[in-house]
Image 1 (cartoon, one colour):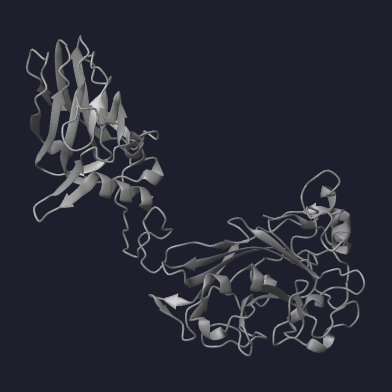
Image 2 (cartoon, helix red, strand yellow; image 1 turned 45 degrees about the vertical axis):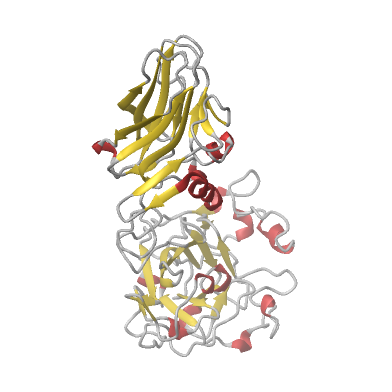
Amino acid sequence: MRNILVIVFIGLGIVSSNAQNMVRNDAELGDRNLYLASCWSMNGVTVSGEASTLVSGSFSFRTNPVVSESATAVWIKSPWLNPEAGNITVKTRLDGNSGGNRAVVFQYVTFNGSNGGTGEGNAVEFARFDFPNPINNQTSVHNVSVAVPAAVIGQPHKILISFTGTGGSARIGLDDWVIPGKYNVDPSKNCFPLIDEVDSDGDGVPDEEDDYPNDPFRAYNNYFPSKNFGTLMFEDLWPALGDYDFNDLVVDYRINRVTDADGEVVEVITELKTRAAGAGFRNGFGIEFTGLAPDRIIAVEGTKIKTESIHVFAPNGLEAGTEYVTFIPYDDAHNVLTHPGGGSIGINTDPNFPLQKPVTQTVILTLKKDGQAAIGGATSLAEVGMGNFNPFLISNQNRQLEVHLPGKTPTALADKSLMGTKDDGSQSGVSNSYYKSKETNLPWAMNISESIPYMVDKVDVTQGYRKFFDWVVSGGSMYADWYLDLPGHRDNGVLLNAQ
């Protein structure tokens, strides 16, 4: 856009004085296509150095023979302008050929945003100049001046000059067109006008792009895994495989990293829907953002913690004694999901008991408050994402017993001596080996990018998701869509889906 506008301003001329801005077009670019590229338009008009229609300089605008009284037959039209008060002036002449009459008609074109093609609304005539009769042999240059209509001042309009007449073959030359006002056009957007962008909160982000148009400290939402929820599923008997039904804890999640106009993270909003807790254990749930220092966080709110908790918390609400940002949404799944009673072992995993409706829990980490970052400094969007998202189950109120996604590292509070014992194939110092079973690399936790059903209690996940095992042992090269409801992929008879 910038290069084209340079042609407009240099080749066509826009002059500003203390009194007024003036848009000028003297045809001296010498090429009709350059004007079209700069959002001028014309029909039956070209740029010519032909002596019979030359008004001044080396080039003038030259019409075809004018033989119609219709204002839509032969014309030249400016780009979108913001006209100012004053007079529009042009110089015009005939080529001396025969004809009945000839006139120059001045119109303005209104802006209509609902017209996606050109943005043009109605054309309204506001002045005209009639060449004196008889026109035969007439070649005098006429200086024409017409007042800018009050209705167009300060708003996007085009100025349209039409050439009308009857009979003969006389052509019209036009030159030195001056319009009080400023260009208001964007060639990169179909030559639409540059509508002033509204920025209600003054943060430098236009309202139409701002997710928080009335908040100067927030600008954009940035979700993962997407605007929709993903699903986390856990087995709680690590380092043993257990019944492998992946319903000991089922949590749907969506994380929004709200950034400001500078691209710095203001807050991390974690929405959780705990859908199932199939274990006999009282399991907790934590999230670490690996690599992010705890002093980047001002406050944590929205957690659900028992009075007598196994966790110790720092003044800002993060878990104390950790190396990286670690927060505990809840220390017991029963804090957020009601047990149905009646002898059910778990919650929402036995079809013989009514499903309890999950309630959305929102946990907010504040990283900037009123525009001021935490003591550890500002955080970029790249520092909080799927790459360092490290959710984990805390098994049976034992803070040292963590269950993570495959390849993710335990937190500073985990018992590392359990790594590589029983069925676990973790190798000390080989991070990608963590939380995978020996030989088969089976996981104890899964992160799915969308919300999916989970297993009925005590039914192996491979029965409900028939391609799961093939996906795991192939290292993910086969059946990457194993969790989708495709032919041969699922047995819906052993799946539940509390929502």
